[in-house]
Amino acid sequence: MTVECTLEELYFGCKKDIHFNRKTLNAANADKVIEASRSIEVKPGMGLSPLKFHGEGHIRFGQKQGDLVVKLSQIPHPKFKRQGNDIVYFHKLSLLDSLKSSPIHFTTIDNEMLEVVVDEVINQNS
Image 1 (tube, rainbow, N blue to C red):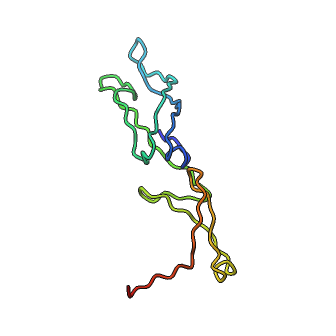
Image 2: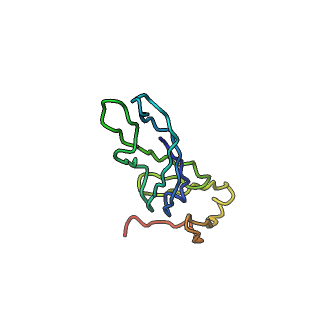
Image 3: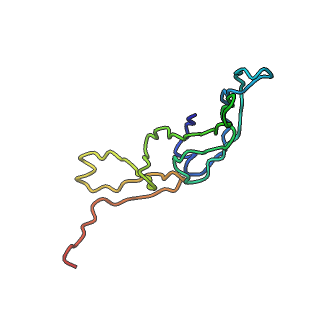
C-alpha cells in the first residue's frame, strides 16, 4: 500500500495510522477479507524507502503468510522540492529585483528566516 507524507513529515518524522484490507482464511479455509490497521513510524530524514512488516500481509491457503509493504510518497510542496538527500528552494525572481540585486528572504522548512544575496561576484583569479 502507499502512504502519502508531506515534506515536513518526512523531514521531522511522524507516526501515522494506516488502514487496509487483508485477505485471511475462515474456519473452512476459504478466503475472507478483514479490515486491519497498524501504526507506522516515519523517522526524520528517512526518505521514500518502503517499510516492510514480515507476516502482516495476506494469508492464503497452502502458502506462506505474506508481508505488508508500505511505500511512502511525498505530497508536492509549494516552495521546496526534495532531490535525493537535499531540499531545494524555488524562488521566482522578478527582472527588477534581479537588476537591483535585491536579496532574497525566505523561511526554511524548520522555520529559520534566511537572507540570500544574489549579486556576489566570485573572483576566479584568486
